[in-house]
Length: 389
Image (cartoon, rainbow, N blue to C red; front, side):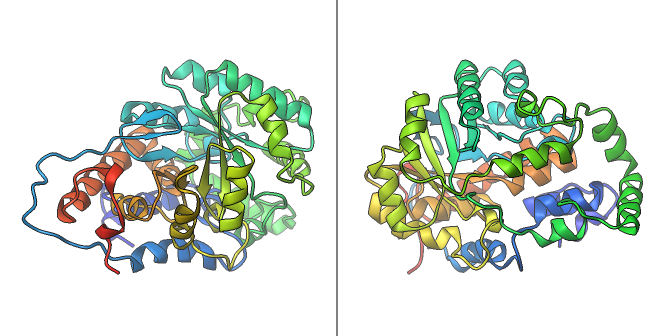
């Protein structure tokens, strides 16, 4: 933990610093929702340690006076090989956080991905930005409403549908159970939670009061009588469909004319199947360790998948990406870009759009240093030669 963030307003420098600022600012149940993961949180930790175990190969006396960080993913030019990942209920962390994130992404020249369970609706994000953003969808039991969401995303000009495929059932996140985010608190627990909220007056005023409506903006028509997040959450939990198979991708394709990115692929055979059913790309991901604990870190699975299908699909990855150095390592192992989730969630909770912009600027500088000191000049031509064996 960086002690600077405990001081008198000293500036945060890293995603870890923003994590500490978010911890101080948010009520505990919201911070734990961002920070926590499934079961014993082993996989979430392995996502971080997987990057730490990879060593960059330092090279010297090479002309690195001109560096290129731009790339092209799913037909879209990106100023950086980064995407702001879909984050559920982000608008509970900062006032209208999805809008703030979309603006920060637009300014940085990268995509923002709107979550199905965002606080801000597709239309609100569209009205606040000019750049195209991506849309994330679950294959719901209510296929009619899923179709309606795809139609709304198309009308908003979203070029990419990010289909989350690792949520056939919900993983158990014990922090959420302990602090009541998953419901079921005793009377004393509810009182403690209420006191915790009252003990964070800045968040209470800025988000809980000024940030209204705190509802799932994309689900208002599906749950018209809901007036609180728990009511919306109950409907969402009922919509995860354990019967979804590869055959359902054809139904999605019938209803989505743009690019389709499957998020949650961790196995080579699944990656090959994604190519076979006509996906345009995949996100190598274990959901940030929030689904099945004990599975492989995303960065460890990445090179095998890249070797198997990298010529057929655009490959992105997420899980444990906290710095520009991590991004360079992922690109060297075969990814075209990385999604960042917790990094922007911590930043928006701590300092809103300004925090996200700072994290992205920091990651840009870190990528530039990593490129230069590995003797590389272009993120599009990085290979495993940038890493030590």
